[in-house]
Amino acid sequence: MRKVLIFDTTLRDGEQTPGVSLNVAEKVEIARQLARLGVDVIEAGFPIASPGDFAAVQAVAREVKGPVVCGLARAVPGDIERAWEALKDAARPPRIHTFIATSPIHMRHKLNKTPEEVLAMAVEAVKLARRFTPDVEFSAEDATRSEPAFLAKVFAAVIEAGATTINVPDTVGYTTPQEMTELLNYLMKHVPGIDRVVISVHCHDDLGLAVANSMAAVAAGAGQVECTMNGLGERAGNAALEEVVMGLRTRPQFYRATTGITTELIYRTSRLVSTLTGVAVPPNKAVIGANAFAHESGIHQDGVLKARQTYEIMTPESVGLTQSRLVLGKLSGRHALRARLKELGYTLTAAEFSKAYARFLEVADRKKEVSDQDLEAIVEGDVLAVPEIYQLDYLHVASGNTTVPTATVRLTRDGAAFEEAACGDGPVDAAYRAVDRITGLSVSLLEYNIRAVTGGKDALGEVLVKVKDNGHRFAGRGTSTDVIEASVRAYLQAINKVVAARERDEAAAAQPGQAEAPPALDEGEAEIGP
Image (cartoon, rainbow, N blue to C red):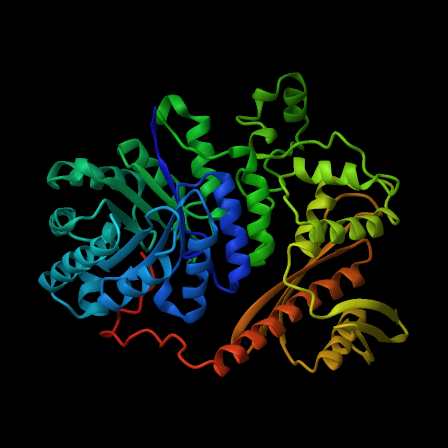
C-alpha cells in the first residue's frame, strides 16, 4: 500500500481556533508529541504574523527532530524571507508553504488582482522559496471555488517554478466528496508535471465534510492530508487527524493507503492538545471522545461481551485507551508511579516527576484508588503547565444558603507569602476575587467548565477556565477532589500565564532591534492560511 503523508497544522491553523493562544513552550511541547506520534510535517506557524509566532516556529525548528518543520508565507517576498529566517536552523531541510487565492471571489474582492497578476505572484513566490530550500509547498487558497482551468494553469506554472507539493484547499468547507474527487481527477489529467509532485488537500469542516472530503481525495490519489488534532481550526475547524488516520487504518482494503502514525499515541496527543489549548473534546467526538467506545444499549452490550467486533470497528487499545494494570494508591511508591506514567506516554524531567508524585500523594490521600484518567488530569493540569509564578499555599472558604460566601487565599511567589480574603457571589467567585487582590490583576473570566474525571463520590474534579487580558485569551486547568480547590488551581494557572506573558512583553519592549511588524500589503492579503 502507498503511504499518505500526514501534514499537521495544529500549531498554525489549529491555533486560529477562537479563544486559543499558545506560547512558545506550549507549541514546542505539542510539536515534540506530534513527532512521537509520527506525523510527517509539522506546520509550526506563520512567522511573519508576529514576533511570538516567529519565535515559536524558530524554537520548533531548532528543538524538534524527526518531522519536516514547515512555516507559512503569503506569496510576497517579505513573508518568504521571514519564514526562512525562522526555519533555517532545522535539522532536516525545512518546508516553506506559500499561498495565494485563486478563486474569482477572492481575487476580485479580497486581493483586488487580475488572474494574470495572481499567476505571476505565485510563480515568483515559489522561485524565491526554492532559493532557500528544496522543499516548497504551494497552496491555491479557495481552490474548490476556483475555475478548474485557471487552477490547473497556476499549478502547472508553480510546478515548473519548483514547487514539490501542490495543495488543494477547501478553504471555506464548501465542496463535497464527489466534487473533490472530480476536481482531483481533472487536475491529474490537465496539469503537466503533476506526477512529479505530492498532491495535498486541506479541508475545513463548515458543512461537517472535512474528513469525508479528505478521505475522498486520498481515494482519488492525493498523497498528503493536512489536518489537526481534535479537528481544531478556523471557524468549524479542520479535518481531524485522528479520524483520517483511523479511517485509513480501519479500511485498508478500500483506500489501499496507510500512514506512519503510531496510533497508540493518538489519545495521549489529543489530551495534551486539549489541555494546552483549553478546548475540551466533546464526549461524542469520533475516535477519542469519552463515548467513542462506550456502549449503553443492552443489545450492544450483549454483542460486545460476546465478540467485540460486533459493535467496535477498532479497539480502544489501538488509539491508546488502555486499562491500568497497576492499582495505584497512597501506598504506591515512586517506581510504580513512574512506570505507569511511562506506559501512559509521559516522559517527565526529574523536577516534573517530583511535582507529579507530590500531587499524586495529595490525591491518593483523598481517594482509595487513582485511575489512569486521574493521572492524566494530574500531569496535564498541574505538571505540564507554565511555571508556577504564584503557587497555592492555603485556601479556606465559607458558604451556605444563608451565609455570605467568603474565601481566604494564601499564595506564594519567590518564597514570599501573600494572603487576602474576599466575598463573592459564591465560593468560587470569592476565591477568584482574593486571587485578584493578591496578584493585582483584573482579568475577565470568559469561560468556566467543570467535570468529573472519573465516577464515584471521590471523583477527581477537573476545572477549565478561560480568561482575557489586554485582548489576549489564556486557558487554565486544575484538578482536585475538592471542586473549589480545582477551580482555584485552574484560575491560578491562567493567571500565571497572564503574568508570564506580561513579563515577556515587557522584556521584549525593553530590548532594541525587535522584529518589525508584518509589512503592509494590498487590501485583503492579510488572510493567514488556506
